[in-house]
Length: 186
Image 1 (tube, one colour):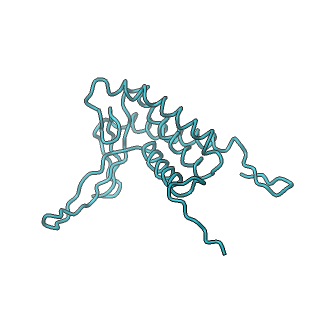
Image 2: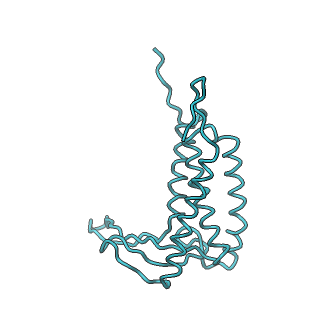
């Protein structure tokens, strides 16, 4: 994946990151199309009983159905998404292209954002199908209970992982990081 120059410097090929971006978007869209074509909303297949199932749901809002019941919600997301993508792309071009960590995080953010944006344009909702039942503790009587984590898709996973990586980069890894660790000079 890398090419070593005569002077010993490593230069990455410019086509790798766009290829990864396209592959991630395709994987997301293929999985969503499969569930959209073979399930009806609310259908579920238990993969790991009492923990993980494949369940089709249509999300007209953002995370946790934020703004799903607002008539203007879809318009808001369809207008906001290209603006946010342009801002992240500018950050990628001017700041992040010097760091492999930042580029990988932004590729994940782009793939997730574009994957869900395609759904919004095609269906006016996002296709979600990964459903987990988790355990929690009720601190009033210290009993254990189960709850359903909101159903999500691969694009949502890309977005969350990419944003966590980007935050780590900005806070700790960038040359101008907020919490820069200084090496002790000997």
